Amino acid sequence: MLGAPPPRERADAARNRTKVLAAAAALFQRQGVDAVSMDAIAAEAGVGKGTLFRRFGDKSALVAALLDDKERDLQAAILSGPPPLGPGAPAADRVRAFVAAYAGYLFDNLDLLRVSETARPGARYRIGAYRFWHLHLAILLAEARPGADAGYLAHALLAPLGAEHVTAVLGECDAERITSGLAALVDALVGSRQAPP
Amino acid sequence: MLGAPPPRERADAARNRTKVLAAAAALFQRQGVDAVSMDAIAAEAGVGKGTLFRRFGDKSALVAALLDDKERDLQAAILSGPPPLGPGAPAADRVRAFVAAYAGYLFDNLDLLRVSETARPGARYRIGAYRFWHLHLAILLAEARPGADAGYLAHALLAPLGAEHVTAVLGECDAERITSGLAALVDALVGSRQAPP
DNA sequence: CGATGAACTGGACTACAGTCCGTTTATGTG
DNA sequence: CACATAAACGGACTGTAGTCCAGTTCATCG
Image (cartoon, rainbow over all chains, first blue to last red):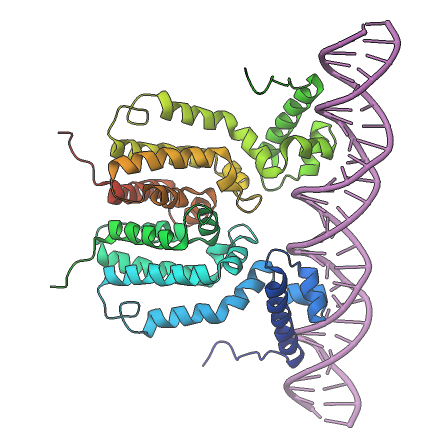
C-alpha cells in the first residue's frame, strides 16, 4: 500500500515547465545569470509571472532546477561510482575525493550556484543537495576521525565550498590555489595521505 | 603636507546621521532586523530616503555602521589587548583565541551581522572588517604553519564564521557545540594545544 | 459525451531597494 | 551682514521579487 498514489503532472504544466527552463537557460547564457529578471524569463517563456512562481517558488529554486542534472551526476558518482569518490576507498581518501570533485563542479557552475545559494536568505541550507553533501561528509568524517564532532565538522568543511565564498576568494586566489588550499585543509582534518597498510 | 585637508562634516549631516542610527537601532530592537525596511527607518528618523542612501549607500552599510563600536573593541583587543588575543602569545594560541573571541562576537550580534554580510552579494568580503580579520589570521597562520598557504587558509577559516553559515547551523547545533567544533577545526590546522618549551 | 472539480494560468497588484534631481541650507569670504 | 557655492536634503520615480485571485483548462467518471 503506497501512501501517495503518484498525482501525475498535468500536460500543460509539464509543457510550461519545459518552456520556462529552456527560456531561463537561454537568457542566462545570453546575458549572465544576475542580469536576468524573473519578468524577463516569464516573457521569454511566454507564460505569466504567476505560473513561474507557482512552479518554482523563487529564483533560487528555478536556478537549482537548472542544475539538477549535473548535481545528480555527482551524487550518482558518490553513491555508486568507482572509488575513491564512490564506495570502497578509505574514508579519508573519499573525503579528499569529494572535496576535489565538488570544487570542480563549483568552478564549472559558479554563477548558477551562487544565485541558487543566495537568492534568498538561508536558501543554500534548505535545498536537498546541501543535506546530501552534509550527510555524506558527516558519515565519512565520523569514520575518518572517530571521537570528533563529525556533524559540525561537515558543516564547517562545506562553508568554504559555498559559491559566494569561492566567488569572493577568486578575486584574490586562482582556482588552482583554492583547490590545493582546500586539499590542505582536508589533510589537516583527516590526516595527510598515507600508504595503505 | 597632508594630502587631504579634513573636509569637516556639516552640522546638519551629523545630526541626521545620529538620528538615522538611533531610529534604526530602535526599530531593529522593536521589530527584528529583517522586518525593518529602509523606508521605515527614513520615516522613523524623519529624513528623506535620499538622505539615508546618500549617507550609507545601502542597508548592509547602515547595519555595519551600527556594529562599528563593538567591532572596534574586538579589533583593539587584538591589536593591543592582553595575550593570547593580543600580541605576545604564540601564533597558534592567538589563532585559537581569535576564533573563540570572534565566535562570541558573532553569537552576540548574529542578526545584525547576517544582514550586513548578505544584504547585497559579496558585501561581507568588501567591508573593511573582513579584510582586517583576514589579514590578522593570515599573519598568524603563516607563523604557526610555515609552508602552508596562509592567505587561503585564512579565508577558509573565516568561512564557517560567516553569520549566514552560523545562523543555518544553529538550527541543528547549539552555540556551545559550534564553538567547540570551531576549536577542533583550529586545532587540526595549527596543532593541538601543547605546553610551551 | 458532458459534467465536475482540482490544478493550472496570467497579469494586475503590493512592497521594497535603490536612483535622480530640483530645492534648500550650512559654511566661508568680502 | 550679504553673498556665493558646495554639500546635503527629500520625496517622486524606476525596476524587481513575490503575492493574489478570478477565470480557464485538463483529466476523470458516470
